Length: 290
Image (cartoon, rainbow, N blue to C red):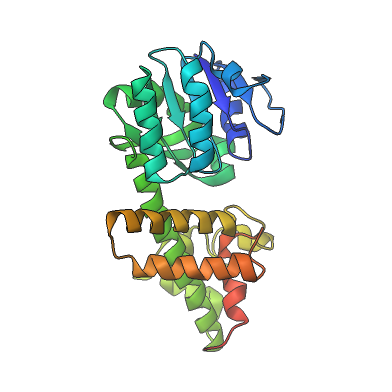
């Protein structure tokens, strides 16, 4: 395929590189002018999408997605598929899907899970929303960039799945960090804590696969001074999206609200900016009961 790829940041660049390695012709555009192996850089977003069979976007937020869509949709060929891999609000995803459909295009909202490591290794999980035809056209590209793609439903369903997943992730990480901090103050050895919880009813991804305690469990950002695998400010972005969606849907999400408030405090008023979201553990270690 000829593929236009817009947004060659920490996630987009390795995704585009993997598509190029698989033999696809990639025309890339990013406002920073970054160079990616195998990707032909062009001057504008419109240049990247002209004549493309598929266009992939990986962008920071819904407002930028809408602005890029305004530029590229009129320049795309009818029947091409627009695949947005950004994590944005559901309303923006649906608005862009409607815009694409009106222009005779297929579209998929397909946010990802797996982080920078998954993007580089081609092991991402895609949560996709859109028509069956759009998903079928995008599926071969998902197979190159990831290990799993789930068709979650119509337009916006991929974003809905990502938002719900990451609300669970944020809440669970806070609970895991709180529990380690409590265990410390109760005199419980961290390795013993892990050995018990990881094999009993407290089992979770944040405990078993991404343990926030250094030297415990598999390698994680905690073992690298909390250098981000998934930055705290990105978790805050996703939690805010979850609460925006909850407001729109009139859903009661008290734990999601509390998690959002805690990550806001951590990122905006403490030392969380630029650190992994699991750095909540040293935060709780330093605090007493208020």
